[in-house]
Image (cartoon, rainbow, N blue to C red; front, top):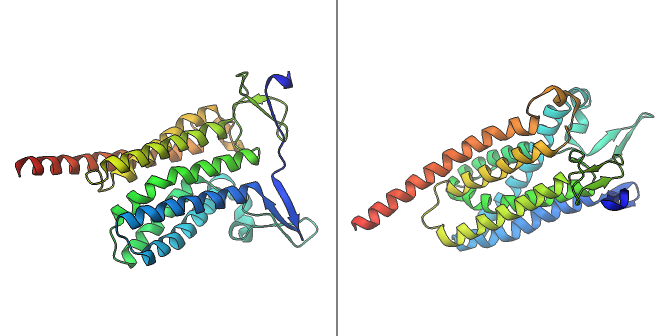
Length: 282
């Protein structure tokens, strides 16, 4: 029966050098950020933002994503453990039973927290350097799905966030979890985000001059977190307290992002309507 499905047993660790683990997750997470930054730099240049502002955005944004994603995972999914091990919440280490700490990397990042951390960082950065917040978040919203896709591929390499048992022909058997064929939920999300990225890039190239004012920010958030909400129905619950919940934590946290996203879509469309009316009168 195993031969009927995709057998997945990838070692998450590529190599260990002097006790420091080099893992697929870290490479994909970093690679996604770098590729997104390269594309974002071109978008910033095309909209006449300075290189200095772009560099500050990368620094602020990177810190915001990592801090937000880490704190959200620790406080929302495993609060009892991390509140009693606060050092591990901040640093990529784990306390060993025999004493001392071991470098583990950041094992546990929540995308909802990463999104919130990024937004806060962008607000602070745009205010500090007196740049347009809405135009900044609109441009970053275009590349955000691409970075999110890389993270889900990283989850696949870790054999984590697995789907529910399934008999579909493309089901994965995650040997590091169990021998059940399951929905490859990480792959579903990864490809969903790649499609969203393509849509965002297409709309940017065809409608950027009219659809700004937060429209791209709203559309990106609405599409990403709607996809997240729906795919969650095919996932196993990540933590024990979710088993008694109608909606899991990922779905509950997605709802505010979708609501805010719809608000900015409507706001952006109203702004476009005003531009169209003004152009017709002139």
